[in-house]
Length: 246
Image 1 (cartoon, rainbow, N blue to C red):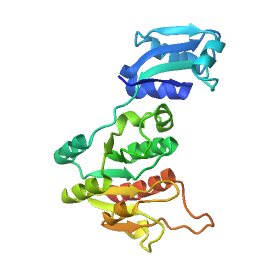
Image 2: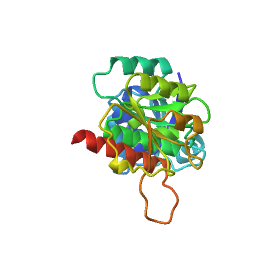
Image 3: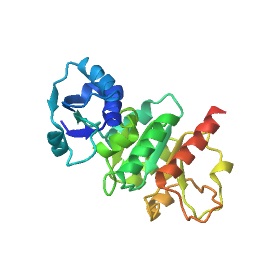
Image 4: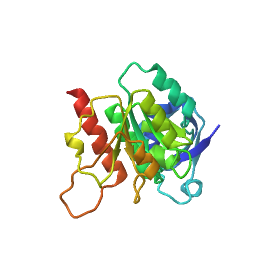
């Protein structure tokens, strides 16, 4: 069992809302009785958990001095799924497939934000690389606001091979890069789809680009050279979502 500690009212509330069965232990500030914390405590008490009251100094020690807002929880982290599980899901899907692929995205904040956008737009799963990628961590869970529990994350060893296999399943691969003329807003995305985003800074690797059926960019008129990868992924995801809704 892969367990870890999370802290803060928002993070623990998200754990209660989306994965209450994975909360194993709760520590709370014995002196804190504010209006934000008490409703959450009442919810947690309904789970028959071991809720331990500590003084603030001991809570500070549990969280290495970080801002815990008077509550710490030990939780079982969401599972990362295998390539075989991805193949099983794709082979049994009834809906039009919709995946987000992250090519060596290493910042856990970006993965968490991508999960949150993916959940909101109905993405069926996020595919990440085994090496040089962020995986499910407490930071990812906190940033995702519960989406780490609702959106499966599939970890693959060889991304180029996985993309080739997805294409064999009639899923179109669209990659996002700045060095192309095709705008995302002028591209038909209403099809079985996997959107590929490159890593922070260097973008997609060459072998990943070569597996894309087409490459698109997000038009920009300002002076910055690129968007944060999670922001760009959100734009791409929602353009596809909009077209599917229409």
